[in-house]
Structures are given as structure tokens and as C-alpha cells.
Amino acid sequence: MAENNSILTALANPTRFLALSARVLPWMAGLSAVLLAVGLWLVFFQVPDDYQQGATVRIMYIHVPAAWLSLFLYAMMTGSAIGTLVWRHPLADVAQKAAAPIGAAFTLLCLVTGSIWGKPMWGTWWVWDARLTSELVLLLIYLGIIGLWRAIEEPSAAARAVAIMTLVGFVNIPIVKFSVDWWNTLHQPASVFRLGGSTIDASMLWPLLVMAAGFTLLAVSLHLSGMRTEILRRRVRALSLLEAQQRERAPVAAVVAPGVAR
Amino acid sequence: MSGGHMGYIVAAYAFAAITVGGLILRAVLDHRAQQRALADFEARGVQRRSRRKAAQP
Amino acid sequence: MIRTLVAIVGRDLHIAARIGGAGGLSLVFFLMLVTLIPFAIGPDLNLLSRIGPAILWLAAVLSTLIGLDRLFQADEEDGSLAIMLASETPLELVVIAKGAAHWLTTGLPLALCAPLFGLLLALTPQAMLAVSATLLVGTPALTFIGMVGAALTARLRRGGLILSILVMPLMVPTLIFGVSAAGAATGGTVPFLTPFLILCAISLAALVVGAVAAAMALRAEG
Image 1: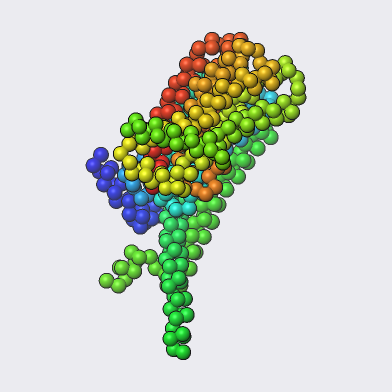
Image 2: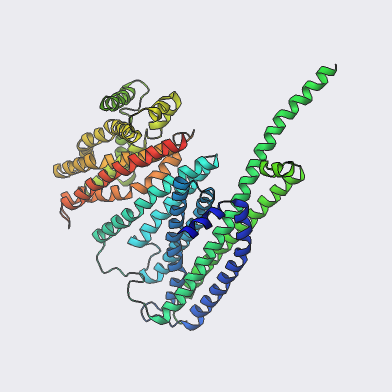
């Protein structure tokens, strides 16, 4: 715990974070690329067709990791939100902001692949299935959070507002899940085909785990890179404010000086 | 890979490729843009306070 | 302390009743929505009476959003928010008082007038009663969830749109159980009390979470 704390404090210095992340990032991105390549090979050349779903079961290998990442990135945002509100950790704001668009993208990916999978399985592009519907609400929450980031200009005020919204959303997500499940069973008979509802065979589990690990590393790499960019963006912002200040002072001197000479 | 559902699989993987590619492209381009902006400021001689302090003790 | 809270509720009710206040307008908006929907889906009374509770609930969700953006913004502009932040009364309670005043001018009138508007949608007396009861216990949840968004956007000049976008996904559970309870009263597979009690629970939870989060938001930005 103490060691963990000291790592967090050491990382609080943005310059040190930039140096450290620059060393870690290529390895992480490379490993993610290797894992995804192995995963794709497994999926397309090793996995047998499912006896029920045929070849379309291959969509699962992107759908499930995307669903996992949509929740993982929201959890990461929640952790950072606590960091922002409780410890005022300077990197927590940055971590929150970088995670939101990536989380939204994976949520969208989960929805679209779910919909494409649904067409051959259910016969329609969209079914108001409990999981798809909760994921849709999650996407709306992500979009609201991104909107709030863009609405408030001052970065640290925006970070605090978004942190509160993220925590409220975090409390709400299980309630949304529960209510959508309830609503779904109320409106649809139990005969609905459920995606991934049955137990999974080992020959399908391993490729899924490899794909999930590859996607997770990809998301973490994207997140680290997003944090680095965000730190730079804040520096740019600080510099442009500084320059504006200097420019405000300079013209006054330039106007006054000739007047005195005359 | 039997069955007539090849199109759906291709579509799903294509969308995944577009999403991931878009995310990577956005990350790289955005990072470059910020780096360029920082270099711009540096060239014009505007410096961050922490650096200025270090430069002129 | 109690006197302060009563004063806040009284002041907000007074402002709402004044010329230029929002009192009554949300009710008019509610009536507009209930009038527009039959124009969109046709005057089939059987269909309308079947989806009537859903129409009334959707209209209630949208009408609650009206006026929410001004809930804290007006106080921010005239400086009373700064006084509330500095006062000895816990901000959470102040925020609850503000929410109560908002509910008294929007949620309560909607719940009371719902049977009247139910006539337009050919609801049975039983369904009218059910919609009214569910709106009565459900609209506080809408108000207190919305209050979080109002507090977060209090200092934004054009916060209305972002407020709705933030808050509407969080209203999904309230809508689900509100409509389910109203539907259950007129027949269905579940007893009326199950969704109704969950709706009550959501309202109570929203009261606590909403008050804490809204107070935190007002403090954080101040």
C-alpha cells in the first residue's frame, strides 16, 4: 500500500509521467498488436463453427471484448473521478478526460457488432434485448460526459463537474441494468435467444481471452497516449494564456512611448 | 467457415477495424498537433513559468 | 435552520408565481405534449388508451426538464447562491429545499392534473388513478435527478441542452417503473405494488444521491 502510494505520488509530476509513459507505451502497443494478431489467427483458422450459430460466432470475439472495455473504461473513469475529488491528483483529471472518448468508441463498437450479429441470429438489426439496451444507455451517459467536458472551458472546473457526473452515473448504471432487465422480462417471453448465454467451450474460450487481453492492452495504450496528449494540450493552453497576457501589456507600452517622445 | 453469413462477419470486423484505426489515427494526429503547437511557442520564446524559473535563478 | 429552509421554499414558490416565473408553464407544456402525440399517431381511442400512461409519463419527464436549467442559475446570477454556500445551514438541505420547491411547482401539478389530461387519451378511471399515483411518487425522482444536472450546469450560459443530455439517461429506471406500475394497475402480468414500491425506492434514493451530488457540484464550482 505504501509502495503503491509512493508510485502514485511520483507519477503526480506530469513531466515524470511523460518520461515514464514514453518508455512503457511502445512495449504495450507492440504487445497488444501481437496479441490481436494471434487472436485473429486463432479466430479465423482455429476456432470451429458453433453448432448453433455457425460462422457468425466469430463476431463474438470483438463484441465481448468491446462490451468488457466499455465497462472497464467507465470503471477507470470512476477511479480517476475519485482521484480528482478526494486527492486532487493532477493526473486524475487528465486520465478522466482521456478515457471518455475511448470508452464511448468501444461502447459504440459493442452496439454495432451486437446489431450486426443480431441480424442473422434474430432476423432484425435491433432487438430491445436487455444487454443491448443497457449498453445503449451507457453510450448515452458517455456522450453526456463528453458533452460536459466540451461545455465547461476551464479544465479543472470541468474535471470536477465531470467527476461528479461520472460518480452519479456509476451509481446509476447497476440500477439501469436492473430496471432494463426487469422491463425486458416484462415485455418479452423467455424464449428470446440470448447471446453468449450458454456455457462456453474451451476451444472458444482461449481465443476469446487472447482477444480480450489484446483489446485491453490496446485500450490502455490509447488511454496512456491520450493522457500524454492532454498534458501537452494543457501546456499549450497555459502558454497561450501567458502570451495573451504579455501581448496585453506590450501594446500599451508601444502606444504610450511615442506619445511621450512627441 | 461455412454458412452464408460471411458478409455479417466481414462487416463486424470492418467496423472494428475502422473504430480502432480511427482511435489510433486520432491519438497520433492530436499528439502531433499539440507537439507542433508547443514547438511553435518555444520558437517564439514563450516559456512556461516553471521553466523560466529554472532558466534564470 | 428549519426556518431558513421554509424561507427558501417560500421564496422559490413566490418567484415561480410572479410574472415571468416558470410556475404553470410546465403544466402548459405538459398539455401541449399530450395534445401533440395524438396528432402524430392518430385519433384511435383504443390505441391511445393503451399507451396513454406511457404518453403521460413521457410528457412528465420532458416537462420536468423545463425550468430545471434556471433552478440554480438564477441564484448564481443574483448572488443568493453565494449566500447559500456561506450559510450555516447544510448545503444538502438547502438543495433539497430548492428541489422541493421545484417539485411543488412542476411535479405535483402534473400529478394532480394527469387524470384530467387522461380524459383526452380515453383512460379508464382506474388507469387515471394509477397514473396519478405513480406520477405523485415518481416525479420527485425526476426532479432530484435533474437537480444534479442543474447544479453541474449552474454556471454555464447555455446549459439547457447539455443539462437534458446529462440527465435523461439517468431517468430511464424511473420511466420504466413508473409506466410499468401504471400499466400493471389496468391489468398485466405483475401486481401493481411491485413496480410501485420500486418506484418509491428510486425516489428516495434519488433524493439522497441527488442532494449530495448537487451540493458537491455547487461547492466544487464555487
